[in-house]
Length: 248
Image (cartoon, rainbow, N blue to C red; front, top):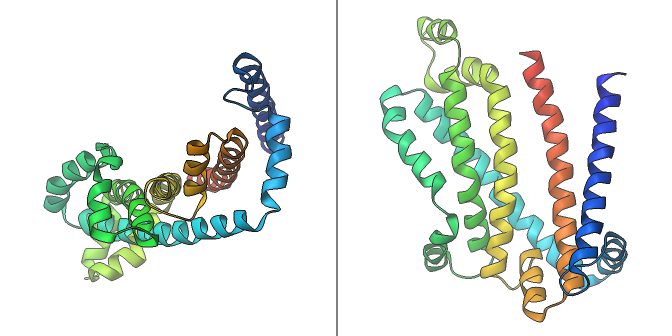
C-alpha cells in the first residue's frame, strides 16, 4: 500500500473515530448542551443558506486574511533580522518566548484602548497570535542554516537583503513553512477570539451571541464550520510541509 493510500485510510479512520466519539458524548450529555453529528450537519446546511451567515463569514475572512498577512510579513522580518545578528537574537529571543507564553487575552484591554472596537481590533488581536511563532521558527531556521552557506555569502559581500533572498530563505524554507502553518492556526484563533469580545460582526460574534442566547444549534454549527475549515487547511499545509522536509 502506497503512502497516499495509507494517509487516506488513516484520515478516514480518524474522522470516523471522531464522529463516533461525538455521538457517544451526545448520548451521555444529551440535548442540554450538545447536538448529534447528524443534527449539527443538518442545521449547518440551513445556516449557510441564510444571508446573515455570509455577512458574518465574509467579515471574519477579511479580518483573518489581513491578520495572517501581517503575521507572516512581520514574523519573517523579525526572524531574519534577528537571525542575521547573533547578539540581537540572544537578547531578543527570550523576550519573544516570554511574550509567546503570555495568555494573549490579558493583552486585550490594551488592544481595545489602542484600536477601539471593530475590524482593526480583530486584526491586531489575530496578528499578535501569529507574529511571534512565525518569527521564532524563522529565527531558528536561519540559525540552523549551514555555516558554509553563510560564509559564502559573506565572501561574495552580499548585502543583508541579498543574503536573505539568495541564501538564507531558500535554505530555511522548510522550517519557515512549519512556522507559517503554526502561525495560520494561531492567527485564526486570535481573530475569532477578537470577534467574540469586541465586534458586532463575524463568526466569533455570532458564536458569542449564540452562547448568550443559549442557542445550542448555532453554537455547534459555527464551531463545526471553524473546525472543518481549520482542519482542512492545516491538512493541506501539513502535506506541503512534509514534502518540503522530505526534499531537504
